[in-house]
Image (cartoon, rainbow, N blue to C red):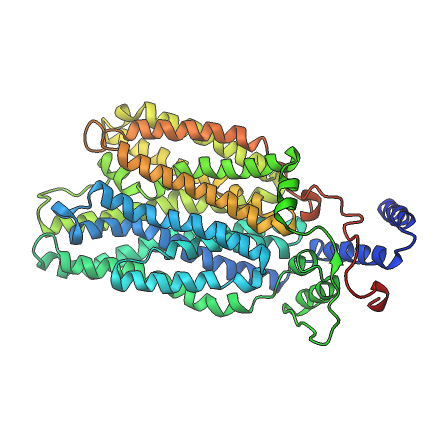
Amino acid sequence: MAANIEQQSSRGSYAEKHPQQPSVVLLDERRRAALAEIDNAKFSWFHVKVCLVASVGFFTDAYDIFAINIAATMLGYVYGPGYSLSTNQSLGIKVATPVGNLVGQLLFGWLADVVGRKRMYGVELMIIIVATFGQAVSGSAPAMGVGVGGDYPLSAIISSEFAATRSRGRLMTAVFAAQGWGQFAAALVGMICVSAYKDEILRSPYPAAVPNDYIWRLVIGLGCVPGVFALYFRLTIPETPRFTMDIERNVHQATADIDNVLTTGNSKPDEDAIIQRVQAPKATRRDFLAYFGQWKNGKVLLGTAYSWFALDIAFYGLGLNSSIILTAINFGSPTGDSKTSLYVYQNLYNTCLGNLILSVAGLIPGYWATFLVIDKWGRKPIQLMGFTVLTILFAIMGFAYHKLNGSQSGRDAFVFLYCLANFFQNFGPNTTTFVIPGEAFPTRYRSTAHGISAATGKLGAVVSQVGFAQLVNIGGKNAFVNHIMEIFALFMLTGIFSTLLLPETNQRTLEELSNEDQEGYIQGVAGRSPAEIL
């Protein structure tokens, strides 16, 4: 009752300030009521559909990104001098996708705010499908990374803008958690393919180049299969009402879309309806600078961008080099003559198995631990906890590296700590750095800002890959791994401080988080008189 009285009082005060514009006041109230309808909507099959459609994209993204970690070993046997990729060859292969991600996140993040979420959703998936298939048959497809990058802002924004406030964190986390299953699938497919070609590998002369050439192409090429199944649903998902309302500035169509989406799961534009554009804040270069030029807004973008940068230093440093790290501590390393086909088979199989264990033991449980508590604890506490625990874990793995690597029990302890690091990356900043930028900015900049944040993260991935490749063999093969872990600990420590710049987004509406006054957001009506449509 008190809330209703307060709302009526608010309406009255706004109407009193605009006595000559009763229609504008009514439009402003209609906008807020429509947004409240989304924010308070019951969880429905449509929300499940959005989650599944977005999740398939992230499953494909993760599969493609982390399959290269497995394929790199196979590529070495086929193309590498001395039957292993040189440092620069390995770096070029692993860094190509993060560089493409960076471009795709910036480009598609901006385009989604300019031309619409719906128009771009699916385009990036088509790029992934075509480029992945092209890579499998030709061995070169750098555009795959661009498509994967485009999926980050689009999936995050579509999920957040359709979600109800009380369950938004869980919905976005469920979408992002598909990344863990993609990593698992890449390792599982690799292991199945290696097992299927076992006899051919053993019969082939060292280094079994022909069967390895088949295997890596299969592992990479199968990554486009889930994308093909998801493409139709990506192309037919409705435009988010928030884009229609706040960027196209068509309140009438947006309110109709909300009713359609919440009841039928579809949006049916009325071609005969009058298109009425309202006067509201519009995305321009000047407006962008004015909005983010305010410290209360700029610090949020700085916090989301740097937190993602710091996290990806370690996340991709580990994720794309897990085979190197496991080899460095002799975990699961094959025995016998390294110049035999049996050694080749055991090395490939153990590489896939090691990555499979890491996914099951740390990566996947971490995502779902976040899912269980993100709408209870909040995003910020989870991110702070994750960065703090990761700082401690990497410090232990770095400073105690040689002692741990001195015995089998020590190596087992190192692997346990390594799995814990994977767990707390996902039960921590890897998930929250994806969620928070999808919530903390106004609709007209939400996708752009998420793209900037994600691209900054991929810059961290590129820096990590280049640094890892240049540092890891200083003093001997894999001799610098302990210091790399110490460097990761330092970046996790800085992530704690960048997290302090962020607001808590839990149980707050997207409009409240935008730091813009929603009463009087609509300032007038362009073109026809507002009385003609009311």
